[in-house]
Length: 494
Picture 1 (tube, rainbow, N blue to C red):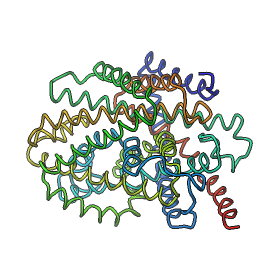
Picture 2 (cartoon, rainbow, N blue to C red; picture 1 turned 30 degrees about the horizontal axis):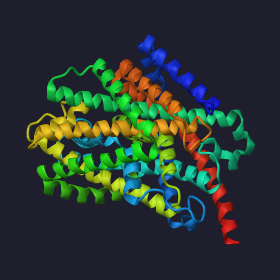
Picture 3 (spheres, rainbow, N blue to C red; picture 1 turned 90 degrees about the vertical axis):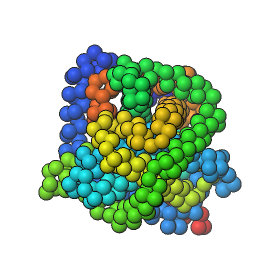
Picture 4 (cartoon, rainbow, N blue to C red; picture 1 turned 180 degrees about the vertical axis):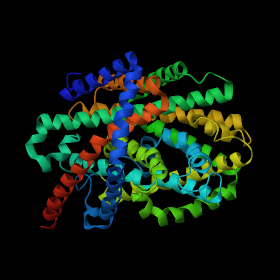
């Protein structure tokens, strides 16, 4: 604990204050979060769309530009992890519970409950359902992560800067980042990380509870979710104690194996050809509609605009709130790769895996819906288990899914404690165990408070609110990075 900075104490104080406020005055806490969220989403939804699309364009530019040859590290640095392990670690940290939580719920909801344009239950609504799910989990999401990871890896491994968000802004603001302004930037980054991860932990606890409720009739209640959070907190603390090269590495590989088994089971036991054909067709429509969807805000249709705020803006905010955590973690495991290799891997591979996942689970869910299982009538956290009831070996699949949710849960929390430890110990690549333990308990506490004060809706409100200030910092990071990159390229060409 001797190495912690003032960022540790300031952010911990804010986190504890919010936890106490939410526990003592839950209604007031919820009302305040709704007010902030409504203002940001109502006035700045367009801003989220523009900046996230800009991140995609910037990443594509770097891939095809001469800058792509520059290595994230010194000339003779080699990658620390093999490609399979690297993909497993970034995928587990980057998507995790979200894939399992929304794998069935999103496509079915877009098809039956909340299609943005088409009539519910029509062929048009069905086609839009999978395409829009691809959009929310595709290259836009991974471009957000890639920008943060790229900038931090570049400054940390190539220029020997501490792995801090503020350090990446030094080429733009100079020594100002060593004082109050730098601390403010790091506090915003740490707090956004805590809220982003806490939200995901809340979703994970809700879905584990939903699965147990669907399978065993256990109450779907806050106190059950609190017990789940406490149990998982103990488990990820044990993983945290083992360190990056053991705990997170082994858990990430376990996640990949469990996810692959579950995916293959749904692909084989579900409507196989329908899944394969839907995947192929939707890849084309996704690419074709990408420019339009990227900037669609529907100013002349209030219902459609509200859908965009509820879904697209929410997802962009979710990825932005997660980006300090995921970006720092991906940067930490990416030393020695070129910019072109790094961006191509981060943008393409996880996106395609996500598309395959949603094709299998989404189409199996829609088939179950059309076969008479009321998936749309279930809470989102139970949709996955409702889909399994339409397949053979449903109990086995449900148990496997609960295991996967749990390991994703543990991996996300474990990775987050590592990143939060880095950010509050001046960018240390090996933060102490006590610091990681403190952040582990803090993010679990916030997850519990958000579930207590307003359930899943409170989680969404907190995400959109926390993401906004950090999105501005991300833009500044790109400007700072590009300025340093141009200088680096001139020196290499001499």
